[in-house]
Image (cartoon, rainbow, N blue to C red; front, side):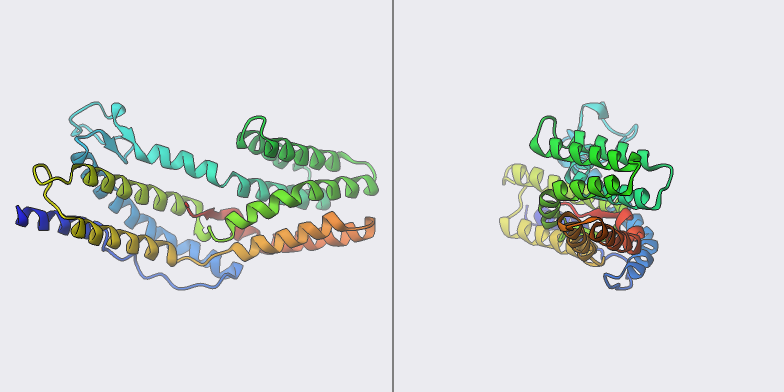
Length: 301
């Protein structure tokens, strides 16, 4: 029994102990983060392999009632569609968790295009409205975001500069309290890893955590003889592996803070001249960080 228990723990530890490929450390500067995106392919390859392995263990331990794969294949001894899919649930939760960030990106792009008078501004406004509606039907936040998108739309078609700037200031003022709340949540989670890599990390993490839940539920002497100490050691190795994945990436939360401050300046500008100056400052900040922010993903909580 003891031999079996130690062997099991060894398998668990092996599933979590592989360090990701060495990735060059990068600062929070935009150029450094963009350079980091190119190296994330190595990390994604490892995550793919680790997730397949973890899913296979989860499927076996859960009597094939749970999986982390889209299609476990013909070897799955039961209809895979009846298995609870951890991957699908993770991706859905991930999409919901950073809608506030995606709205900020679309909002910033709309500001940029309105001032520069690009012709395809309506696409960003439409995207912003869709995100606002997806946050939660009839919630106060949905109403606020929809109003903000509407103000951007009015600014985009305004004939006079005065009306345009007035609508943009109104949008910034309406958005500021929400933006500050969103920034508090995002600052510590917004990573230099791109969104796809963040998704891969989230799927891998949730798959391993689900495996530990199953192990804990069946870890009895008559079924699965393993001790709390062994499980704790294995779980600790998993947590260390998670930190090594996310710790390789530079954080880009400071860029969000800069946008929050710039938006506040727009909302408080006393006249058209100050509004223009504040908007131009916002656009410069956004343009300097655009490539980084539009690709970034928010780490799962």
